[in-house]
Length: 121
Image (tube, rainbow, N blue to C red; front, side, top):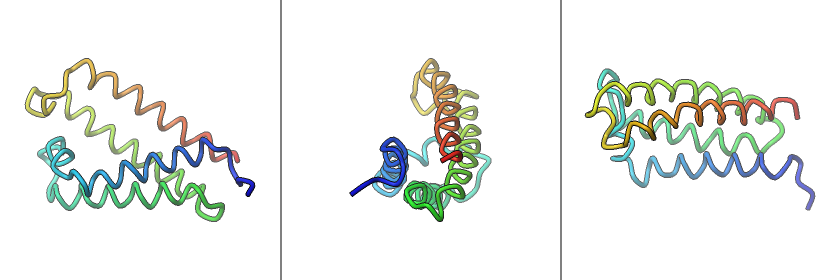
């Protein structure tokens, strides 16, 4: 069986499916880092997990690849707000060291770039 896209696109898709599943397996982890100004934390955790699963699967299929890439890029940009929120106070950091929180920001930008690269396929 020949793959339609490079293996690393499928790896990226699997990564988001796994990350999305974790929202359902360990929702408390994600609820701890939700900004206080957002309502319905549990619902938002489940919705974001569902989006990650759908978009992760969507990048693997030609008819939905580009729309899913745009969805992932949008989602990753929105998640940057959570990363910045976690830097706002010790309580918001949820016990994660500041250096790691700072490191997550360029990592997030790399994930955005990684996803965006697949629009040219």
